[in-house]
Image (cartoon, rainbow, N blue to C red):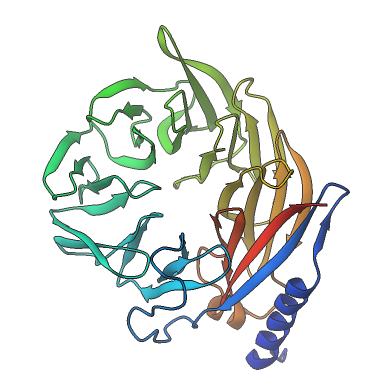
Length: 380
């Protein structure tokens, strides 16, 4: 019988790899370098955090949310925790605050980054927040509709859809909804559907992911089975029209991770064993091969004399990596986070959707295997 490596040894090796990464910068060619700015240890899965833990970052310090399994919190760009807590089921996160909720319930609390109560609201459904937290929505428990709430908790508008919701994306005053019947709807701030379409050409119709730019000028969706494709729409004076159809070579039967860059010029989404980096104007596609499942996609905007870049995390068992990609598809680096390990460490130290990716200002946040790390992409 093959002898398993002791769990203590595997954990020690993982901590040593994290420490090495923190001490030594990772070179990204001649233009930029990736530096670890700080590391915050996180409690293990199932370990108590003593309720909502509050730490150094005050309410006046800008913070960003992070999540690792059922653990979530807020952290400043320089690594000061504002809060840390666990959710009984799931959590809706935004830069303004969070809503932790149970599987069944009807009264929710929007808490600020340091745990202070900001608002309460009630109703059947699952809470959903816009990225900035200025919009609160409830998705119906049967996934056939949603409604937006005012700050007072009163309904601003409600809308039902002809099929089950499979994906929702919020940006600015716009909301994109993908449906199980393969259609895509764009909803404005008043709850009115301003555009809808159902891309054809696949044997089976379904929508698996949607994205919209902050100004509502571009819309994207991953739809269909056999084949599965990415469709881009662009707004003009005559309304919205499809501007590109991009093959993905994938066969996903679940929600697909996808997002536009801040300036709306680039889009990244999951593809078959890869991430697709797509020029939003031309529809040209670059595939970045990845091992395993994509667990995070974020865009780190330009700062300090360097250009913006996509950061894509993927995991295959206990092996994980982050690909740093500059549009339209130049791979600047591949950063390993995991290593070959036993099944025990894969199930124990790694949360199901880790590594988790996010941003806090110009700092990239990476949550994985008991650590929250802040990384900086800096010009030389």
